[in-house]
Image (cartoon, rainbow, N blue to C red; front, side, top):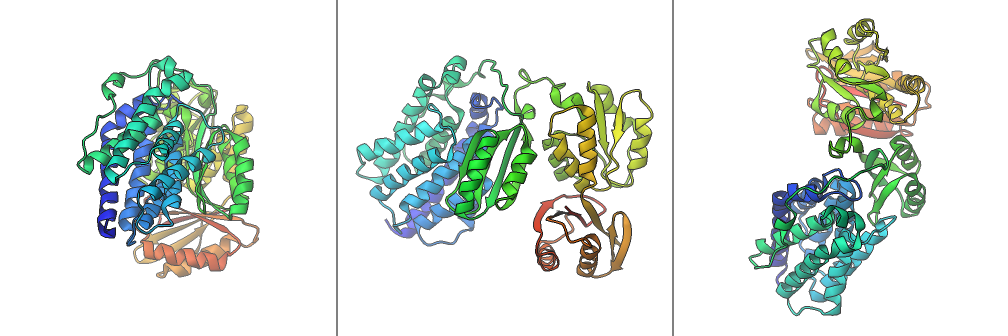
Length: 513
């Protein structure tokens, strides 16, 4: 096969796989009852596959093995959920297995499938049979035992083996048998294989999806409260240490990748501890924390679950910021950054939700007054933590993730909020203004000059370890790169974290801790 033709077929297969996954996404989500009945396996696999395709399309390699390697890299960086990270690790192993050949043939692909299945299993702390891991093993072992004679036969054999293994999954996993379903991650894998094969113009006997169109029966979940995912840049030696420490901090632990950045997934009751432990081994990025009770079906979780023992109300003027606070477990009160909300806007969630105590995070100096007014309008216990930046609010929410007595949690939230030194860059006409601790310290038409002065004003003590940035849509990528380099020069000892805040009225928020 000519190299260009092979690359084109890989891309056709990948796009066909994603198309079928997107078509089947709701069915795969409905099958999702293990390890957590959160109904998002199909969605997570689509996210992961989109990342693989995007990286593959952006790659200009001239060999099949390099294109597959690019797809694996994109999948790892974009992987979501337990099954998504496992699938990304499978692709990474597949890429390693065929890497020795520019134009891989049957033998190299068989090796790649077996390396992929092996690496996927090794990435999971506690492998469970009847899941996507079993299907990967069965199809890899099956083609190795009886090697096909052509690429067409290889694809059809892989599909048949994966389909039959999926049918068998309830016999291996009691949770699936009780609910009358097959494994969701394995189903997503089979859907992708079917879509890729059909995109190449081959006929197959598809999996009998119609048998599983009804939603699964009710299931229960009493495991960890938080889903935590991130990438970790560190040496292979440090990766081994991080894996040992982090695996003991929760369940559904997956550590994927053969070189940095590694991709990590874990369910834990203490996500901030997981993040802090990971940072001791290297630099993290792509952090995604989500409350599992927000994901799990409503028939299992009631809205007045334990987290509303303390109701957190966070003010946000941007969609991306809202998502960050929602993922941390907060009720979000949106505003436009200009018109100050009324007391009634704050009272709405207070009236709707049962709670023992509430903590309001204004996240802007403009909203502190109205928040304090609300705290005096009701007999409910309402504490205002006068945050002037979303970064202070997000820092406070790290402590909210700890379950405990309301007095202790709110006290810790307050201390965490004000442990971070805040700077803001705003714009008035053509002039940039730099504010440190809510007081103006510099002004210039050159944003780099203001940025530099602001960093100096905030880092007088020189004890900071992390610097976090929230950028607005006005901050162009080229400018962000210049500011990132400038921050590295000014504070070389600090780890940098950049987030798309999308906030109105301010160009950049800076937080030093």
